[in-house]
Image (cartoon, rainbow, N blue to C red):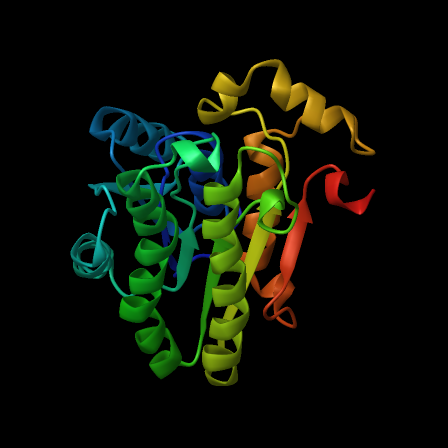
Length: 248
């Protein structure tokens, strides 16, 4: 096991499956003490068990990240249980697809609460302490549809476009004090969550140079890079890990 991130504490949201789970394993493999957060306690505890079995350090905190209070509460619990958070990965998100005219106010509020409000207040709670220590890394997980108009993805894309702007704003705000803020923009990735897309996922992927879907581990590798000092000169960037889908 690498010691590259030894002595660092990482908080990964949406860490019970898919990209978040793969990221938690990747950071733990580099020596970070990882706090996994998510809604499914059974899957969260299983992930912690597997990380520990592999020689890593991890704990799980259940949170639905549906409002400001839950975001701030998670940040405080993580700090109390694992120590000051050095790496924050804002991965938790929901992605309902469908026509704009069938979107309800409740749908709109829920998507923006999880995809925008939760990252916003996690950063509000954790970034000042990182800045006071003079170091830290925040990685936001966005999506290629944050900058690519696609039928049925208006609400999801808009919420992630907000996160892209926040990434740049936070880089300007906290970068001068040692906190790097960046984002990873995944393309079509095969996870438990995207399984419902069926052939549509493969069709999206086929239009890119890679001509295949990505894996959670491939996205996690991009996130992990931005979380380490290997990316020490990278601030406010949005790293596309999409098989080249947005390049053509």
